[in-house]
Length: 375
Ligand SMILES: *Cc1c(COP(=O)(O)O)cnc(C)c1O
View 1 (tube, rainbow, N blue to C red):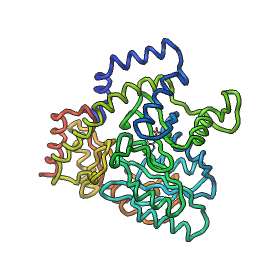
View 2 (view 1 turned 30 degrees about the vertical axis):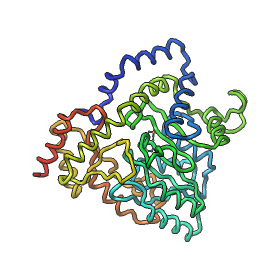
View 3 (view 1 turned 120 degrees about the vertical axis):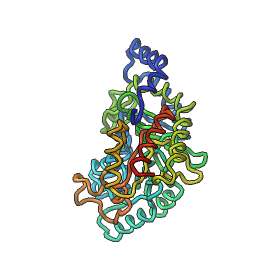
View 4 (view 1 turned 90 degrees about the vertical axis):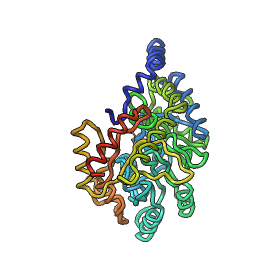
C-alpha cells in the first residue's frame, strides 16, 4: 500500500502523459513553451483569479509575493505555528520576522483570536512594523478567509493564502487560491495537484502586480529578456512539467477531486467513534492533501504508527514540531502561547490517502487501527 499512490495515477494517465512528454522533447521548447501559458490560463479560470504566474516551486511562489510586497527587515509577518517550514522560512529569508499564531484544534487552520492577540502583542511592543498575514490551507481545507479578511482589513495588513496543500478546495462557490490579496500553490508531486518534479504558482487579480511577478521570475526583465529593469531571479515552471500538469489537471477536475472526497468521507464513516476524525465545517470543501486523525496521546500515536508499519501500512506525522520550536527560528516570533499546536504535534497521524485507494486497502487500515485501540 502506498501513502499517496502516484504509480497508479501514472498508469491511469500513461498514454496521454507519455504523448505530451514526447511532444515537448520533439519540439525542444523546454523553457517557456506554449503549454506554460496555456496551463496558467486554465488554472486562473478554474480558481477564479485574473492571473496565474507559474514558477519553480511553492516556496518560490511565496517568496515572490514577499518580494512584490517589499517585505523587509523590521517587518512582522504573521504565520501559523502548525504548518510546513516554508510558510515562515520565506519571511525570514527577506530579513523580516515571522510571528507565530495558533490554530484551531478541529480544522488545523488559523485561530483568528490567537492571530489578533499576536498582532496586538507586536503593536504593543512597538519594535516591528506589522505588514502581512500568511494563512495556510492545511491538509487541503481552506482557512477561514471571511474571518481572516476581516482581521486583515481591521489592522490594515496584506493577506497571503498559502494554498500549497489547498488547491481544489472551496468555501461556498469560491475556490482556494483566490482568497486574500494574493495566493500561492505548489505542484510538488504529493500535493493535491502535483507534477513530476518541482513547480508552483502565484495567483493575483491586479494587472500591474501580475506584470511585476512575470518580470521578477525572469531576472527582472523589462520589454524582453535582455532588458533588465529590476533585480529579480530565475524561477520558472518547465514546459515538461506544464505539459504533464495539463493532463493531470484534467483528471483532477473530471474525477480525482471527487474521488478523493469519496475516499476521505469513507474514512470518516469507518473511523467515527474510534479516533478523532478531521472536521470540515459547513460550506467548506477540502481537496484532502492529507487525512489526519488525532489520538489520545503521543504514546498512543507513536504506538499506532509502529503497529501500522509492521503491517506495511504507511502513515506520516505532519507536523512533529511547532514552527516556534524549530532551531532555525530560535528566539524569533514567539509572542503568543500556541498550546493547540503544541498538542497537535504530539497526537496527529496522517493515513494513506489518494483518489485511487481501494475499499479493500482502506478497510485494512481501519481494521488495523481498531485492533490496536481494542475497538
Ligand atoms: C509544500 C508546501 C510549501 C512549499 O512548496 P514547495 O513546492 O515544496 O516549495 C509551502 N507551504 C506549504 C503549506 C506546503 O505544504
